[in-house]
Image (cartoon, rainbow, N blue to C red; front, side, top):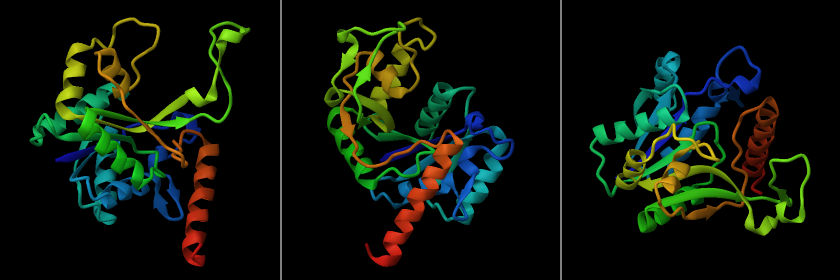
Length: 243
């Protein structure tokens, strides 16, 4: 079985919007979260979708799933107080649903609706082979890494060797559960453990990279919202004009 955990429990404070959380904002008449769920509905390898929602919006999420006929989304659960606790609740639900150690779990942000199906396919393939696959995006500019107000030559990194981490992040269920059991999330360290891939690496797991080339934007600001709108209009025009 291949499970998808869609993280959609945030309230979108950076959107500076006093209304609905960002995942429910509409573009071209459809909520952002629905665009994301439709990608996983379309993906042949995905068997079951678990949506992690804010407690106040579970009913609304269920109504959208019914309205847009997302048949694979069999469960909407209440998330935790932060990303990691929401992640763990999603993994616990996979186990409750009968997930086995060798089953695959694809973890994705609900506000990354532009993920390409080829990236989902490759994540599942690599995770099945190696136990872990993490999507990364090659940076296009030279990177400087420093905790000071100035930088030496050693702080400049080749962009060919530098990536930003996106999603999905994909694991064999048994391996990611074992990583969480081994790792104390509150332990101090130079880098905070913000997501499942970092927990996996901290527990000693080898992270295998899936390099994406397209636009896999995470909607966090009003500017992102309008960029997504432009991308969706571009795709619609390509379809209409057969480009």
